[in-house]
Length: 364
Image (tube, rainbow, N blue to C red):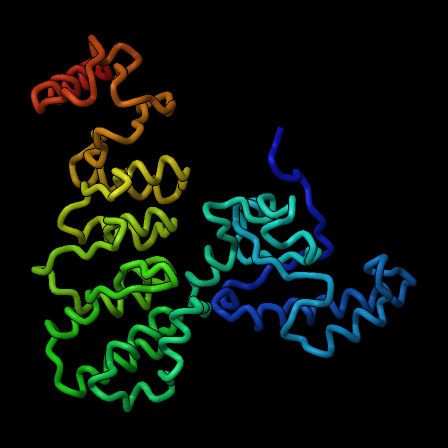
């Protein structure tokens, strides 16, 4: 039996235009409320009540009090594509008592990994503002991004930190320009960008690049990545995640494609003993997995998936059924390979013989 309610209430649905994705939550609420007012006016003219527990006039009055907020008793939900039939930019008006973590509807409304919804998936990725965590907001409250063009050298990192954490592309460019204006070399800027710092109450160690990948806004990430010194080691966070790991964990296929072809070593594993491929399979991120498999083919790795390791589950190439690492795994179930071999004992010669046998069978 499912642990959450299978259906939830949706009173109204709107699909935003792509150019509207990157606006703030308040602007999204405003756009949705404008269309909702038109609908309520039409229903009122026809003698139909929009919401059984509230009169149309009262509902209109509460919306007009603040058009940038959700109507009373409701929430404008940013739908993830997994709950909107693959569509991006869908906003749904749902009851407030269903849209909170303790509700039995919560996992239906937010089925994605760690309750991430549409704002994470398509709004932030289009440049919508990100909200600072409470601890970070307190630490950076004295940093006014409007002063970025005049930022003192001693505070440049804090200005850049606030710009990146809030997903603010314009301020990011202004701070980077200010760094150049003050005479910082590309190497010095690169070191600042890759500098480790902590975020949140748990003091999680990260870098500006990791945070930019999480938000998924490609123009902002590229603005930072332009300065990265290729001779410096790939940055990792407190969980041992490389930038590609973060792109996989947060389902950022566009950035994953950039990083796979840029990072020196894409076969690293994090502290959970997971490689990039492992993460994508476990989270079932199909688009990102397709990007990874395309990279494997172009880089000559084919189906070998070098990111596998001895502690994580592996997948059979054809059945896609998880198997424990100490079990025999049939590499080619259709007679392409004459015996099963343990994954841990693969050698170059075994792999080469397997691929050769595969090609011969295909040609028959």
